[in-house]
View (cartoon, one colour):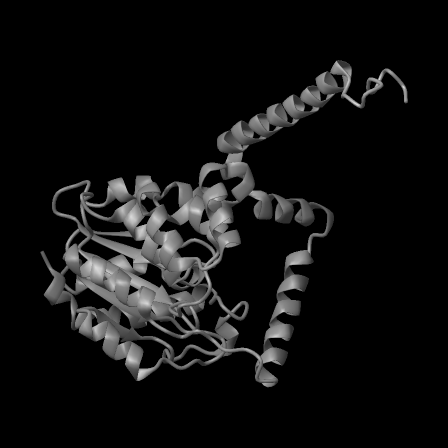
Length: 323
């Protein structure tokens, strides 16, 4: 055996150990450079990340000025597309609210699993509370579906809640390891978004194709009876309980969807028993399929109709939440 690699008794040569340490050190340096770089430029990865990272700023703007009526909307892209803030402001002021300011937290793909923990992280007391909170979603957004541990750790769960989240929401060792890694490393948590950004550069329509493939697979599985929605409301009830303790006036809003969907009487009763108001906008007068620019989002004309219907539904309840 060559003496440059090992001695005659099989011991590793010092030169080989030095080379191994160089490799390890190079990997550590590369990881640290990536970590620092992503922490500095993470918001450039997507508009959605920039929006989530601005949540602490949004929270400080609630109650910033005396005499305002602050409304916080927790939702996702459906709320972003479907609620016109200036029109909602105008309608609420006509209903008797003065100095209405509408604040949004609507991460892409947001659902009750994200909203529950994000409210605790960004908006809960001792911060000043809004006069009204609207939790807006459609179809499965209120269901107790499986959570994404990586997204949750990086964007929605506060450090103080990480232990509770890991115990309540994750039921595998692998998932908990992913969760804690994402909580301490932005580069680890950002891998899916970096991959999507890279794929967008080389295959501009890959997301649309993947979405259509996933939709087709979901429909086929449902037709075969191999898919079951976890439509429990435990997370929704937990969030409503938190909001009731914080003495928030809360409205749960079912937004319209391109495809009709059902909401169980059990869920509506749970919402009302938690002290929140239920607003059903699944069927908005004058809103038709041509007002949707895709299967989840309305266009501007559709947003005007949805916002007007929302304001009308609020008008007979808003006196209960006037300061």
